[in-house]
Length: 74
Picture 1: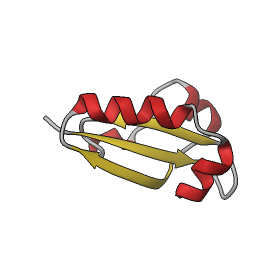
Picture 2: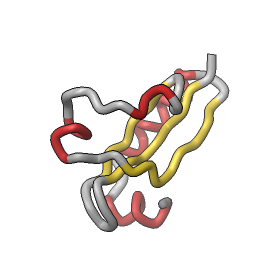
Picture 3: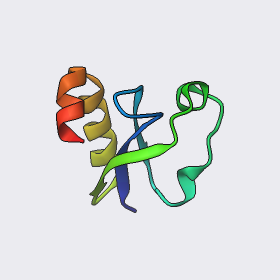
Picture 4: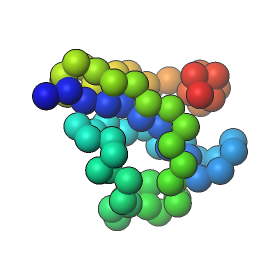
């Protein structure tokens, strides 16, 4: 089963949330947590992975990035 790493935001130059999911289309609804608290609903970047493990590794790596690196990626 594959996975997907994604970045969502609430508005331009706003809060960025990096996440991972096995089904990007189904994960549109917000569940209570960081993204819900800050109203992050706009998908601005995603990357498919062959398996969920590599998607999780990418997510953990990107969460350590500087904010500007994330903005440059988007």
